[in-house]
Length: 623
View: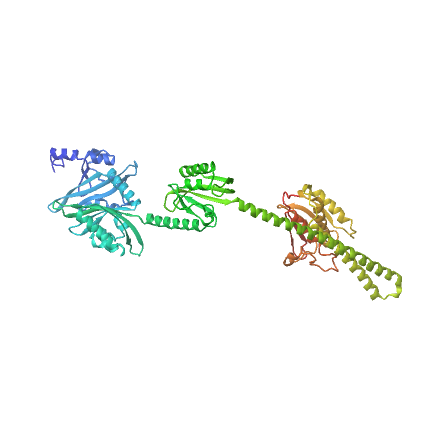
């Protein structure tokens, strides 16, 4: 070679002036020459690398293509050193050290002497802006489901952009130089004749075409396309190619169909509704009237399509008619709804006063335009219904009051009629036992004692029945309570009942409640009496509050939870009467009192593990 590896000063000048980066390498990879543009692209000083191996600046370079790192063996540089001619390879060059990255169009031109590679020239052109602009356009078209195409009408071949195959549903090979006839194979059979005529007419005249039609994909899916384009004519007026675009408008068509169906549903619902509903369209004409609203407009004929201002002035007197017209127009223009919970006005057509609850709001009507929908309710009819309902409630209340009075009288009569005979049975049994003395056998004495105890128990049942009946309508006086003090009074009352060894009652301090002190005191006395009755001698009964509920806990025999549902039913007992005395009404009374306080009562237990009775009270129950 000459002293200048490029041969001549003219060649050197052209080399340095080139806009693209140029790099000349020997077959072993040594740098022969590097122009300024190449140094600028890679951020290096060209004279410092001449005579060095290209890897000195390439070691910090990463090459990527389509977001995938390219193996060094596939770099354009190595392909060039193998003697390959490379044209227009687009790849990203990333400098790991500086972080700089650009998109390059790379090529390589080998130079052979006597059949052997003597040198190779690598070209690098910065196409970052051009590439990104193309990607932006392509991305926008792709996002919009738009594709462009060109049809060679002479050869009958079609070429499309990157989106065309996907949008049209064609195989890639058919979208890049494939026969035009394959386009028609995708068209839905019901649209094929219409599409063919439209394209033939546009081709013949050179006029633009715009047509919507369906295509069928490989899997049988149907999509809607909007095709726009025009044919280019030669000097003789013959069409030589067609340029155009296709857009996937499937979602739009589905939305239109859904809107149509929604409009039909809306119209059907309004027309067939028994409620008072009607709609005024964008031209301020009455568009829809429900069955329930027909009576209001019975004197307006024709009705549908009538100017709504005329309708209102026919039905209502002034000034309300003009006020209503203004309200409807304001809602139509601004979208601001209006609600009149009670309107009393005089009918112009009937001359009588009517009362309505009505509201208006703007809504989309079946024609796709905004209108005003009015919903109204005839308060006159509701007032008549409420008056009738109140009359029936009053009658039922009177009947219930009389029934309660009859029940009181019956209960008192039963109590009075039974107490005297029962006392006689008890007294006679005991007198006979004392007077007969030793003349009675042991069996006779036991029978008389059993008879007296049965009469006493029956007397207790009568008393509890009377209390149970009266609790249903006992006077209720709700007040804030120191529940701890109420429980302590109940505990003292229970303790005075002559227990052989009464259980210890432990009451939590600071419990507060809202309720009737007398009724709650009675309920707590029953719960404490029940707990003490089933507790062993020397046991402990605990009363407190936890997790939002009050509780009474004993250490007694307990019960099987399978039978818990029977606990609060009248006369239901889970224990032997001979072992634990009782009438079976105490817990039923407790439940009735708790429910009158807006709460509930339940029990938790297991055989031999004691029982816990819990109850809640509403925070504030009206008296």
